[in-house]
Amino acid sequence: MSTRAASPAALFWAEFAESKVALGGLFVFALAVVLALTAPWITPQNPYDQALLSLMDARLPPGSLGSGGYTHWLGTDAQGRDVLSAIFWGLRTSLFVGAAAGVVALCIGTTVGLAAAFFGGRVELALMRLVDLQLSFPAILLALVLVAILGQGLFQVVAALVAAQYAYFARTVHGAALAERRKEYIEAASGIPLRPARVVLRHLLPNCLPPLIVVATVQVANAIAIEATLSFLGVGMPVTEPSLGTLIANGFQFMLSGRYWISVYPGIALLIVIVAINLVGDQLRDVLNPRLKK
Image (tube, rainbow, N blue to C red; front, side, top):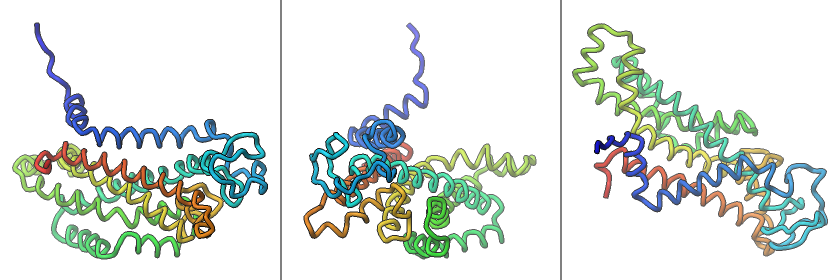
């Protein structure tokens, strides 16, 4: 009997599945995405519809029965929002910010890194000095300054995160592309000559994808954490927007009075999502670069 060789995707999944911890992280992340997407249908309350809120339900402890006739399993906040519903709705904003900032920063950073590695000379010097200058500042500090300039709002936060994170992608892609740029097949393709765009897209970019994927997972987690930090400080998402950072900030003033659930449960949800993404990124790093395996 003839056996068919396993596809690259099957081999990749088999190596990834060797880590049960990474599979757990992937499951938790997928579950968070599903809960975020289905929040309007599975939550008993839209926590940001003022008509559905009642101050009679404000700051109820976990497990209390509210005036709406359903149990608030994680309690309510100062406005009477169901904390569990608010977490599911907050996941929508936090995951969107992380994904949007990660994708846009990846596209910009990849373009900058590939252009610097392919053209070299003054182009490389100018682009990479700009990247090095940006990397000398902490991402959270740069994002804080940019949000202070742009103002509060979803797209303002995403723009600030993109500007703060694209340099990480540019540096990673530049290093990988520079190593490929010096190989003979790239020099042969350039000498035929092929169009620069074709050489970059068909030869340089595919060889930069493994480290790029790993950096992308890390930066998505960082974007979610930075957004939460900005929102907690009051300069990120406005208080009317469902974000895990704003949920933590809304309950911080009640921590000393014993109403811990308003901030603690959103904080736990944020921690779980970030850890899950990082676990997936760690395993992707080991699979895509076996030399880094312990």
